[in-house]
Image (cartoon, rainbow, N blue to C red):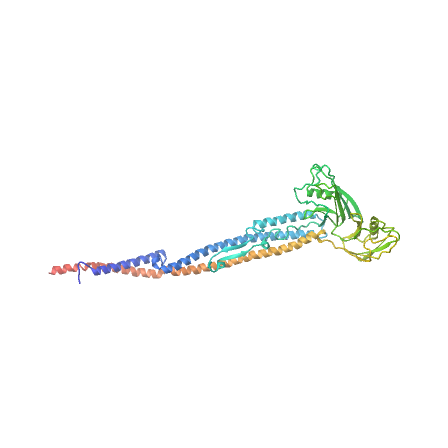
Length: 515
């Protein structure tokens, strides 16, 4: 039917032209944007999946940055740990030098550097955040992503465990804070006396200005003189206006000891702040003061050189009288030295000491009267043995060491009291510190590797998610280009057909003319 009112053919041509134009427009949109999906209507389900992939990619991309930042932080920590390792090497060198019995230098100089290096360890540990309670002395979590937090929280983050005291590397945590390489000394320690801490820089001792009655402190020292004989000398450190710091007092005491030509004896401040005397020549010492409140040692205190092998008589010495006798045998260096005690040479403890030292000349064993003046002890820098024969009773008793015959107990030196004991203890502590530091370095290295592996996985996931997103969202350029050509042809055909369809009503005019 030919109709003037309604040109159905033209409407169909217009509809197809609109369809082809829309299709061409969509294809051009895809080709110019590069995406197959440019609006939700293009593929709503596909767009939702692609958006999830895009979110995962964004999360992982930042996660890789987080991990790289974590690696950088651990590398900074690692560098600090390497520095601390070098300091430990220096500490071991200093300790080994001081641990040699043939060292003839000043151990105080070694210890000054040693203590400075300990402080530097603590400073560097704080600088890298691995001091006790430091920023990185913790369980470090680096969020990377890629996992389901709702079901697998741990799969989205990497943990580097640097928590707790075992992962701190300051001097205290490494067990080095109280070590030193000073020559060991014996502290004045007597429960009846108060030993004032000397390592407090604010402390002030023997100040004659504030305590007008101060007269200083007197030390009676038994030592081995340059002729190898037991000797005793008294030295005094007088009070002074303004007083002394602990270090100044020790210097003054050492000057007094040197002034009396006492060889092989020195004073020092122990690691616990006590006044110590030490040295191979020291046998024993006692200290007396007026009991002033700012005295180093109040009232009276005494010490035996804990560096030496020694035996101490139990109880008071029994003076020999009448015909009482006793034989004491001292074995030193494989040689037996016999001491025969009787009223002739042991009528009191002082005479007994003289008898011992006369008989023991050349043995390296020395007898001294105890500070109380009631007993005696034998001391030596090397091991020795003592045995006593049964006392021969007479009008007086005789038991210089023990009433019964037999061996007398000889105690070994206290390790930290020897000239090399502190240094040897420091070497042991440093070995432990090196091991502890190695474990921390291992934890840091493990963390670096874990983050490296996590970065590799995250980058792999980014690639996979990007590929998956691309397959859903990106346009197939070849197919789209082919479609564009087809759609352009269809559009041109639609336009041509529309022209023809619009021309159909014109045929009515021809029919009217013919009539």
